[in-house]
Image (cartoon, rainbow, N blue to C red; front, side):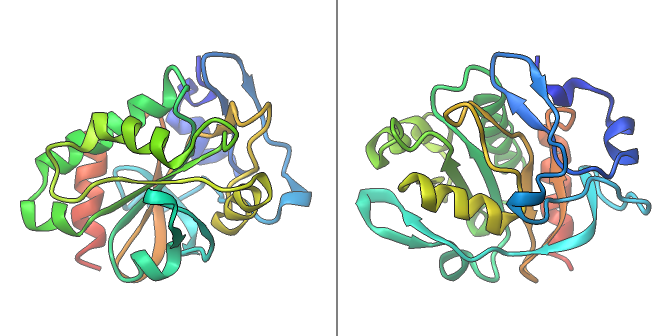
Length: 216
């Protein structure tokens, strides 16, 4: 059971930072992660979004990893100015990761096709030892085959993966990547993330907030 099965109210009233989700296992709280840099807070008093309001908007992070075909992928440059969903996980995850990707796919099928074409979905592995570009492409193809814009899978060496998580403001994964943040971050056309989603959110929440951030 994911730690994000706790009530959404508890998430919105606790500002200690993100919680790591053990895919297929128990929960482990992130104790501030002082040595990992600032992590996103999950307290949003205005509650503007269907997802989780982030009180301090997060800038679109800058990091370069290995993308499709083994080519370098500069996240900031490739996604700048476009609505972007960013998630850290791994392909052998039995629950949180496939559920999140499925929810994203359902959300994109439900929004205006013109919006769906703009949305970039980036999945960064937390298990780079196993998740090669080929493995990531096969995995993500299970979800995006009928969508106008394909999902992008990123990998790299462990140091680069750790730096990407630090840049994005999520706690670094533990237990060989199997204990990782379960937040799905949404960056708007202004390159800020004002909202994120967890296991308590639905595909409808994602669709509603995608439409909202593109109007900002």
